Length: 271
Image (tube, rainbow, N blue to C red):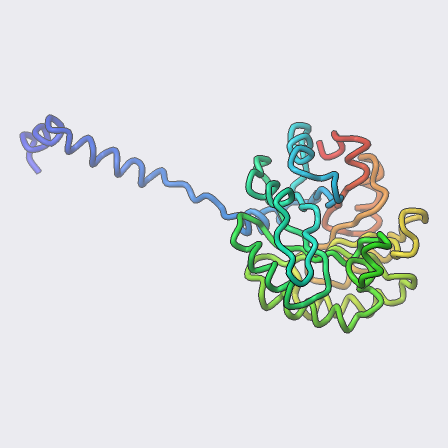
């Protein structure tokens, strides 16, 4: 191309447009999808997550946490799943308007497999990083319906639920659990089930459902999970300070921490 033709292109603006297009193409930046954000976050150590707390960890709470440092992962309040249930708009708002810049994982609670599968598919139409199944809620109104921590009395049923969800969930699939309903011996039955269904992340609250929040946390069970499973494990329970966080990371060998009530007491805990 001779010099006169180049001058013509720039005079007419065509050359400038071509240069602008080439420059834009050269500077194209890949924006990660929420699931990609999740996998990128797992490379960090230690990983931090805000625990889902019903009627507490809503969108304004997330925004408050983000203002003071914030965790690497946010978990929604649980979506109640049963026959005929629909996605709760208040909780869905946290996903649609998530402005924290961090991945959000949608948590479900329930035991009816067709409804759990349906809800998981509905949730995957939104900008979420993953789907979490609640196997730890100790509220009597929940466990008496054989949901949340109530399912820990039936490992075979958990096996069936995880199998159906693993097949339906095309993005990261995670689980939050306690170490048993009233007997932590069941934990050794649960770990192979979690491994079998290749969950992407496990959060372990180191108490049984029966213990609620009264007893000391059994961090040795969390250490056992971290040592046994190939997926990352988060330790959960009684983390109220940076020194406590460091101590339990060291004692359990977990990949990170999920903090709930400690974040209410101290919004700066993730900073």
